[in-house]
Amino acid sequence: MMRALSIAATGMQAQQTNVEVISNNIANVSTTGFKRSIAEFQDLLYQSSSRVGTASSEQGTTLPTGSQVGLGVRSSGITRVLTQGSLTETDNPLNVAINGRGYFGIQMPSGDIAYTRDGSFNYSSTGQIVTSEGYPVEPSITVDPTATSVTINPAGQVIETLPSGKQNTVGQLQLYQFSNEAGLSALGGNNFEKTDASGDAVRGLPNDPGFGAIQQGYLESSNVNVVTEMTSLIQAQRAYELNSKVIQAADEMLQTTNQVR
Image 1: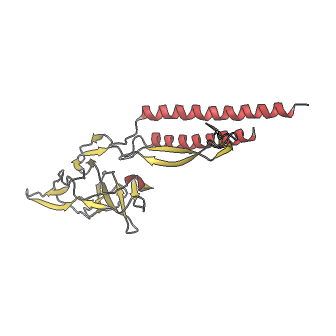
Image 2 (image 1 turned 30 degrees about the horizontal axis):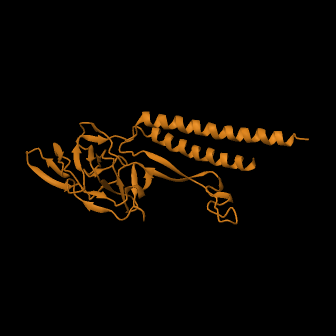
Image 3 (image 1 turned 120 degrees about the vertical axis):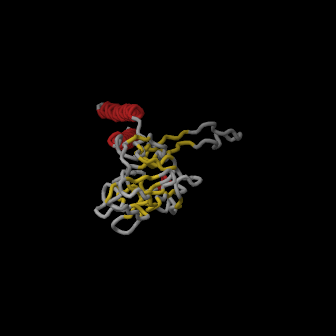
C-alpha cells in the first residue's frame, strides 16, 4: 500500500505540472506571437518480482509475461508548439507579421540578440524602429521624422515617403531561423534566446527560400485554441482526481490492515 501511495503522488505532481502549462497557455491567449506548450511525461522505473523470459522449469520453459510493477510518472519536458498563429489586421504601418518561418532580431541592452515573432514595432525619439519595450530592431533601421508614410514590403524593405514625394529605402528587415526552434529559451516579453539545443541563428531575408514573408499592418495572434485548452484542462483535472482517489483507497486499505486483530 505504501508503494501505491507514492505512485499516486507522482501522478498528482505530474498533473499539477500539466495544469500549470495549460493555465499559462490560456493566460496568453491574446499575447502577440505566443506559441502554446504541451507537457510531456514518461513512466518511471519498474520493479520486477519475476523477469519476463526467465526459466520457469528445469525443462527449459520460460515465463511468457513476468511480473513488473511501475513506480509512477514524471515530467519529461515541456514542448513548444510552433504552428503559425492567425494574422490579425491592425492598420498600423509599424505592425508587421511573419507569414511563415523566422524570427525578428532584437538588440538587447546587454548587447546580445534576442529573437521574437512579435512585430508590434514603434518609433524611438530619433525615428529608430524599436519594440514596445524600446529595444532596437536588428539591424538598426531609422526613419526620417518628417516622413509622411512608411511602407514595408513582403521582402522586408522599409521605404519612407518624404513630404516632397521622394521615396527612400531606409533599411531591410532580416529574419532568423534555427534548426531546432523548440530549443529556444524563453526570456519573457515575447523574446527568446538561442541555446546549444536550438543551434546558431541562420540569417536570411523575408521571402527567401525557407523564410516567411512580411505582412505590413498585421500581427500574428497566439496559436492557443481555447477549446483545445479547456478540453485538456478537464482531462488533467480528472486525472488528478483519479490519482487522489488512489491515495484515498490506499489509505483506507492501510487503515483496514491496521485494525486487523
